[in-house]
Image (cartoon, rainbow, N blue to C red):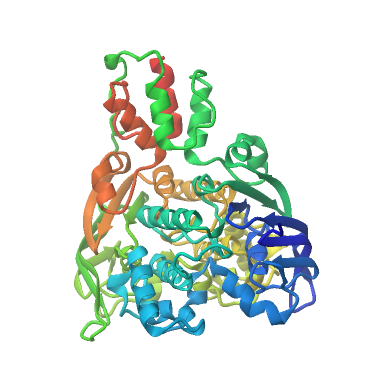
Length: 584
């Protein structure tokens, strides 16, 4: 039987305006049978998205062949049928949004397929309900958060699928959960699993290693080659190989591997948090309850507030029928030189709050201050604020406008009247901070960069201004695990130099690794705040807000509830392992 998707010795290179060729796929061969669930993983620039775009003829190979359900993508006469066979949920949702309201955008694909109007309406309602966006159906998509836009795109792809006739169809998810909160990620993963059960072929491209565990098969790419292709258990057993490729283990697998070094009785192939907790609780020996003292927060001198937000309120398109309340009674307080986490479900107001802190938006209600700047002052020097407070956006491509990487990073410092040598060194310094080699990238075209590379360039362009405060909106979304670890280490080092960090993220382990305090927003209001580890113990409250604690905290709290002598508020794998080792 012919595979549904077949790539045979496919080679592809991007051609830059200067004629330079950037290889993306190098003689790659892959077969996917109808009904399979395949995860594609690999470092930034490994060729994952390029491969995906060959699957519905958005790209045509330079050499080799791509065949979809027996149709060669080189034959343009097959393209319409190929694109009805293979649906795409892209990495950047705005690339797929074409209509002026959410419901019209979701209906667009089905309308072009000739689906009857009554069925289109039913599909739009069902798909928007599925992704939790029905209440937003009349909003303009460009006013949505990135996570909300991703849900709309997914709803549009779902609306194109014929109910109960998913066999022979493939849906490609290219980092489709990167901008979603934990509840949204779980919902999308559940949708993918349901579609698979109903007969759809699923291709999931992801940097979230835990999501690859959902697949039946994991394909690992490196520089345009397939280097591994096996079951999740076998792929993630090769920890050393994955780390050499800039990847990592899923958090629960990593924790189990580390614990196994001190608890050799732990069974192999523990692939879920529940499995790991049950395996630990099944160990024959329980340590005595009073043996470990409770962890207490380090005592540090009290610092005066540097950033204060009080009862902040903001409504987009206020006074119009499209008015949307983004913030109401939001509060935030932190001292200079600290690292602070900003959490909340998709659409909770995190990005809106950050945009107030560097003067892009002005308070309509309440107040906001950063150092000496009153952000509600009608005579505010906005340029001075933005030199002191840098904002790296959630979607980095929105703030990149120069042709070359070096010029993009130099744009801000060039306005400071630096000498040529000073400017060059400032750009080199900023690029080094984010892990971009100066000589390799300074003359690269910005449009030729991968999503992760664009994120690094956007951050370097802010760092080049040497701000006092750095606002980071989902800085690790789109980064492979190796790049993510590297960036977090660099941000920690920056914070140690005295730069104040505010990090907005849906990645709870990112928040745990970097921040000391967190604020949780819900529907534009401050719902929780406090020390990071303590807030993460509020499992039920976090769940009600569409969030969840990191794996380490979930495991530690479950063990503590069953009599293990562990302190509250553990967020670090190193700390958890130390306490368990001491107990044993």
